Image: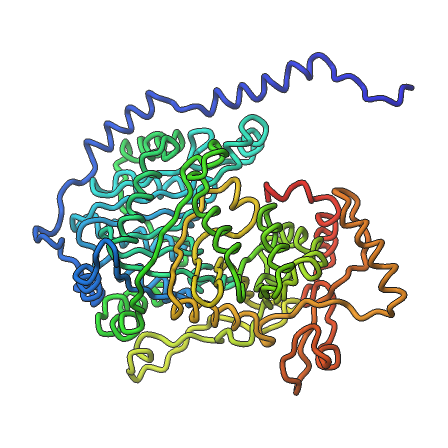
Length: 614
């Protein structure tokens, strides 16, 4: 028997292209269906608005004082902005609801994920209410992970003439991508299928904007009872940043990949069936919705005094704020510097670092340019210290990406000089409950709502994971946005965010990152203690194994995770008392799932080529 590959049967050679062609033809836009849906929506969507006032009966927000102040004080050469850094998830949701109610002319939203859960429904419900007041509402969500509830989408399509939702880059002209279409997308149209719109933008009246890491799903707002994200975004108001945000949104909204709901086959079929059956366009809430929680948040969102004391009074007046966004269809323009604008700006800022870099990312996987920049920072005299806050395996929601960072930990520590802190799934500063509205407002109600548990992961409990993407350079410049500082953010996804040139804002962001990296909230990664002779042999073998794109199977790694011992003051790797005051807790502390650790090591060994995809 020949040892070479067997030839593919002729029928197989013909069948595979035929199968792909069949899938493509079956999933193309049904133009007759789209025409009927366009006509139906145009004829049946409500046109009437409930408010005849010029302000569209908007809530009187204390933020209007800051808007007026920024406009009055700004000149083209010296703009004025106000900034709130939003750390708590529920605060970020509450402020969005408040600003939706305060909108007078327009609301524009971009997001990567929109879920059909409590938070997703609440925001959509409030947006539709704003549209009925007379506010123009536009939502652009990436198709792959947004609103796979076709019933909701069909109802949203005919909710009101002032409301429009589009999905970005639906590969096969459907809102929902079933497994067969997912596989076909990988086979036939990988470059397009792999490019996603990762931008997050919330913009009211072209002047008040929020950008950062949060999507529209319970876990981004501390509302999930199994797994929540510790995330960060920032509210910026002011004429210059407002104009930049508006211009960016308009580019994406007008792009050919931004597809109206009436040009999605599965939505159209449902839409036409609903209309034929006389089903109203009201958006049904999800099953099991927590009405008490929604009512409490809505009450606070409508309380101008509470908003003033909790947010407006805490806003920082700053001068220069820039909003940057990559261009739509970024991978199609690899030679155009403007296509990856945010990525280029971040690289330029890092190259200019002189004193310290503090950054937080959920996925510590670096692009080629980032690796060069950090290597150069480490070689400088004096060196530029780099503090990294990222996820542990126990805290991450993507073990396969963690496995790729695990592969290169020695490089991070020795060649880049990173000080790495890996977030715990049950950080000590996570509250066990949240007070209700009456308590927060000073009332006498003592009701409590369970939020986080502190039970070890191996025994169950509600986990936390990092999702914030932030960078502080030399204590004076902050980057807060959707960019994960990884190859996917560099080359494939479109990203957006703020670059804020202000020491006070930088101090707040830096303090928040260092809080996440504190010993009670994170393990610190350091070199293992081994006899010197054994360390040399192990290091040589491990280095050789790491350089292999495949078969990186050596199990004895250079570094480990360390826990601060009770009674010891915090210290750093390299300090004389570090090992005396820290316990080696192993590669994957808190993980009591053998298969997960096995999968992680498999991806470490064989997954190096998947960096740009994962």
